[in-house]
Amino acid sequence: MKIILLGYMGSGKSSIGKSLSKVTNIPFLDLDNVIEEKESISISEIFNAKGEIYFRKREQEILNNVLRDNQSLILALGGGTPCYGTIMQNLNDMDDVTLIYLKASIQELTLRLWEERAHRPMIAHLKDKIQLEDFIRKHLFERNFYYNQASKKIDTDGFNISEIVQKIVVSLF
Image 1 (tube, one colour):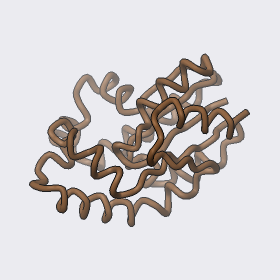
Image 2 (tube, rainbow, N blue to C red; image 1 turned 90 degrees about the vertical axis):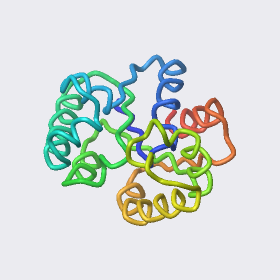
Image 3 (tube, rainbow, N blue to C red; image 1 turned 120 degrees about the vertical axis):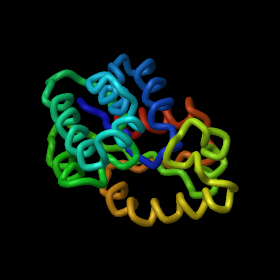
């Protein structure tokens, strides 16, 4: 079984994935961490040095390599991963993959990301919460088509990590 968590940045993919891994005893991987390890530089450095096209090609190669392994795993995708090329279609075509969209509202994402923006190069330049909310709204408008193709959708607003993990476990088993 391969459980793949997707959603916008700040939706909790990594935190929830780690916690879900502890509960299920299924190993957890964060795709962004795997990419950084393989490339020996950060995601933002890859974007700056080699550009988004290079990054997206590498991301797809590394994702395919991770999924080729027959081992069970929980995998957190990057927020944009399912939106490029045929990634979402390919994931949906795999028999051993369960896609879970961690759905958070624009307001919830704005609250979560405002405090973390200095550590997130994509939004570090935004000056106030209104700009951040507009940025998120635009991205979600573009990405919801892909996110909503997941077979399972878990609303995360108002729930802590253990409650969300419990919702996932109930939906899976």
